[in-house]
Length: 355
Image (cartoon, rainbow, N blue to C red; front, side, top):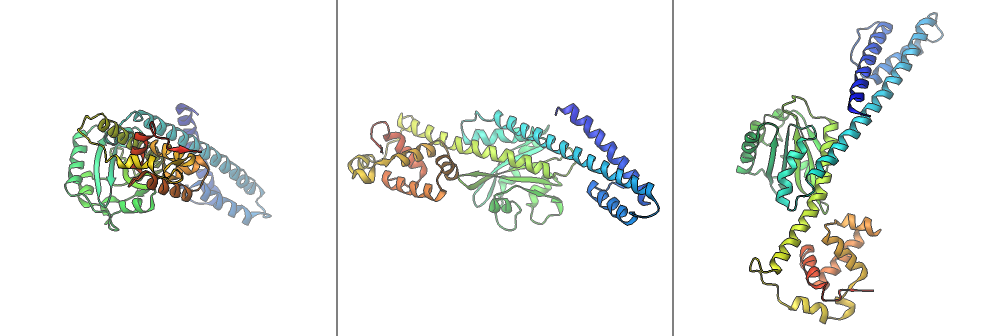
């Protein structure tokens, strides 16, 4: 459904709802109001049941006809809602495609707020989280200086993430939430609330390997409207896609660093040769990676999380974790990044995978 046709059908729906409300008010002897269609259905159907079998068949016929019009309007409402969500999700894909060429975490997080503002938000903020909430970059439509001032306030005293801060809910539950009545909310960071003058906003989590590593905020300050469920859905979809990009560039950044170090551009010295030598010298049934373990290391290098690896290989996340534990032990690595580093250095010269 094209945008002009959506506007045309929306206007048609609004007119139909007004007519239904007027007719319902007349039949029920009450003032027409802007009650939801579902409420009007309940009111009219209840009255029709009370008058069924009475001496006013014409009124009953009109009520039954009105119930049919209510159902038609509800069907049109559902079509428009679906079309609008489809359009919004298409916008999310476009926004994510615009930042897909970012090659570093910093570049990605710097460009993400502007992309989010293309989804209908006036202001968007991207931040990272550990035990504190650290503002990274913000975009304010038509007012970049205000964005810089807001970020400066947030960075001056990074808020601690605890139960007293509403952002903590998104981190703990790993789900998008809406925050209404910001200026009266005691769990909102007060310095940021004062400088942003926000009335409501949405928050969505950024997840890498199942852990919340950042947040995306969005609001509609200039439009002077309260963010709603559609905004939450869009922000959540954008954050999901941004999380995938973030996982990818994290690995790319690590690989780039490794290659730079190998080339000697930073004066880097490789770790003691014993790590690599032990891979070839140890017992074959312990040090050499199995075919499955080699598959998992390749997927780790591509930035896949445990959950995604499990889906790709049709195994459980628990099995993936067991394989990774064995990989770390065999490669003498302390963590996933180090395992990928060792694998990249040795796979070309050492037979790490066996049948």
